Amino acid sequence: MLQIDDSGSGSFVGGTCIGVYRPETNEYYFDIIPVELYNRENFGSKKYLDEVVKIVYAAFRALRPAKSEMIEVCRGYMFDRLKTWLSANGYLWYSTQITGRIQEIVEKCFELYAEKLGLPGQYIKYTKYPFHFHKLLRWVYADYDNRIKLCKVGWKCWQKISDLSPDISGACMCSSSFICMKCGRYIKPGSEVSVIRFVSNRENYVYIHKRCQAHNMTLI
Image 1 (cartoon, rainbow, N blue to C red):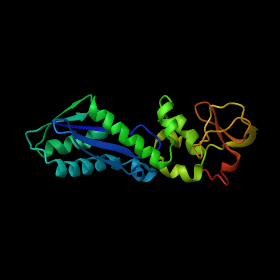
Image 2: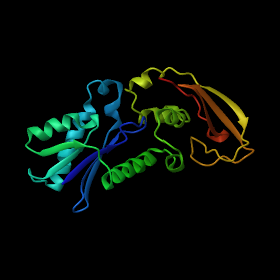
Image 3: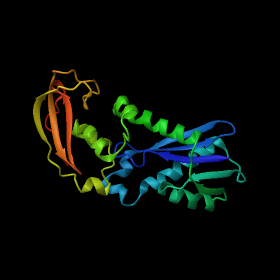
Image 4: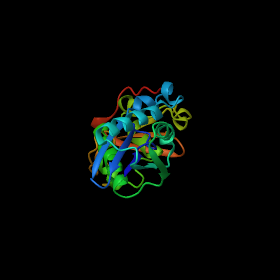
């Protein structure tokens, strides 16, 4: 049996991880849908769904499933075009809720990928719902010019707020529980910080070391 799942499709930052797993032999194949396929030009035509088919095709070349081998496919919309491709090529498949080992592997792969993009490991591990849209916006605005390139800017929810103009001010950090959202290191109590304030669904504050202050933030 093969199982196919995804992780990161709901994360504003990064592309999407697609994983194919054979539990009987513990064989696994994964790849990342490039975030460029989620830009304004490509998102409307859903080119990322075509990339899912390409990734699974590459996985099948590596794992060599027989046409009689059953394939479990996650129910999510990410696999709409894959299901058509599977049927057209004579594979046996059905949609189901994917749980267990495959889910853990794919989610871990996406977390490691997100860390490579620069998202702090502490933020992922210790923050509830770390890939929530508005929480990720705080990380993006800490270094906007560099990080917006890593985001799914074709999303409608981003289009609604893409013209935000954050305010930047100075302050002294009193708490010991904050990390700098630009460099990822903890902010020592008593340190001078820059505070980036913006309003999305609510008022948000981003704290970064004074020395890490982003300059010349250009909003698109």
